[in-house]
Image 1 (cartoon, one colour):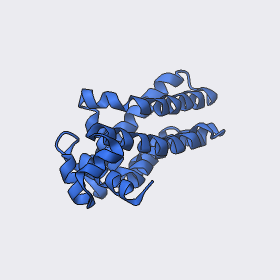
Image 2 (cartoon, one colour):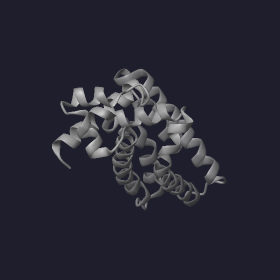
Image 3 (cartoon, rainbow, N blue to C red):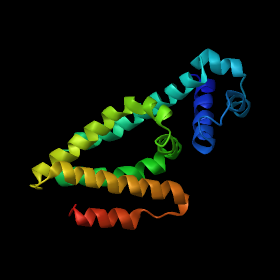
Image 4 (cartoon, rainbow, N blue to C red):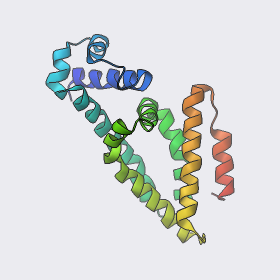
Length: 179
């Protein structure tokens, strides 16, 4: 990937996350990236193409995190990794998750995130397998509950920014699952 293309993606992600997809014109992205608007269209064809490229890049990174969890053979460690995933992603991929979280409530754009759902299905299945392997009576429900807790934690982290210390909550959730 060229440096300019990478810069465009970085600036677009930052602006989409801060201002929203609809409120961010490609002219602003071009201006802040120090490129012509035409270059954005040459690389990505359209604003939607730019958006899809951001999602694809995020999905690729997410796959790496999920693969590490899915391939963890120790069920307790796997559940611990699931619990730690939200705070880890917020530290490393904050803008991408901020964008995804805000899009969740805008159905037309959120539909475009469906490509990523394969990773969440794999993560969910890894949780079900781990809870079943540990003898939980309802592993699907337990996994669903854990995912809801983690979505709430991620929401808090987004809402409160860097000042929010997720460590006590993560430690508490881990203690509930004895991991």
